[in-house]
Length: 574
Ligand code: PEP
Ligand code: MG
Image (tube, rainbow, N blue to C red; front, side):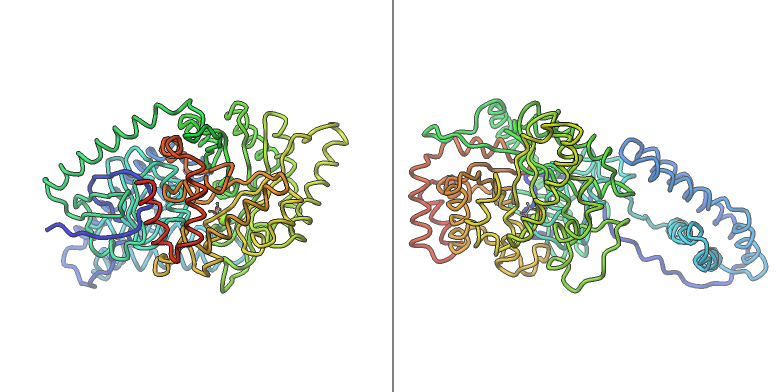
């Protein structure tokens, strides 16, 4: 019997494939006394052999996607499965006490893990305790006939079902096999949603119940355009959605014709539509999608994908790769925006009650020049290879902006001592994502070359609504007239001071927002690469004078976001 589940549409397209639950199975077991210890130990041997085979296969599949160090973890796990001392103890327990295989494995491996964890003077051995526990879970799952989830090991088409997806989960996903993602938690601007758009995987987030509705292997349809999910879909439904997917692909093919076209309105006004990227490897897709530049390179993904603080040289190589890859089109790199929902294993941060309001982004960088300076130096050096912009995230006050610029200027002077003129073409900008910075936009605009409005955070902070919390996701209201008024103030302030106004939050790719933003004269729209051609296609049918009138009407007459949406629909037939 098919079940319909509603969530938040997070990434365009349709995904149809069997469910793959990213949820740990129940590994509890009944204790028993066995009559045939030899047969019972044979079960252990088989479970260990199956675990070894499984790990070997996962490792093979992950080659090329994971680094050497991550791959070595699989070898460590395989080694644990053949540890003679551990095997000996499990065997004795079963033979001497007639213990069941599950209990013997659980007991002996837990003891091993505890013993390792107790080696307080040996950090390496302590860390192996977690490996033993992981392997124990895998062995128990085999004994109980259950499947442990493993993203890197997926080698056939699936729709991933999870409570939530972390950025590190998405980094292991192979879009060839992952046809869709559905989660219980998360909003449209959660980083998991953003990553699924980058990977072009249709996604619905914040469904609240999907992990309890779907079972492994059931056919699932994901409608990432409307936020609908159908679990245990019958053949007729699958056929219906296959037809919709084909029609969507056709529409995509139409948009694809605009790949080399300029981003212009119907009345010939030129804009820029740029791509948001997470790593230099995303540049290829941005170029393929006809991006006029990179409007946001989220540099923290470089840090999150590394097991150590990336060195100046490593960063320089990455930024240079992005700049060179864009072949003369501008690249804007945002300096490290860590904290909030983006942790770094090797940079322990204090536990906080409200991490989104806490020690994050520029606040960390200003306290840690040892982290900030190598990044700025790497960026300045990369600017020798093509047009580059650097922007600071989470600036709230002028003092913060000036402090960030001071560190930047120190780096510039240091580098210029040996390389006169280096960095002279760098454009400096700031994100507008803290309400105070938006209010103070006139003062801020005097001190930067460009603004990039981060609506994901700007909305979160203006509406006081956690962007990852689906219970309050109704407060994600980019079209709220009061918020539109604030945006207009920021864009007008930028233009009063000859400062470029860009936007890199998800609102920049929102089809209802587009005419309003064009009406306000926003210069650059930076979005997931997958949305660029659709936006260029809509843009060419919009007249900026009509858009400006629409803004006036929305601000004058509308009281709610729903009314604005209705107005846009009525006036433009969107
Ligand atoms: C934003 O806040 O709108 C933004 C673009 O930055 P991020 O989504 O990475 O916080
Ligand atoms: Mg932000």
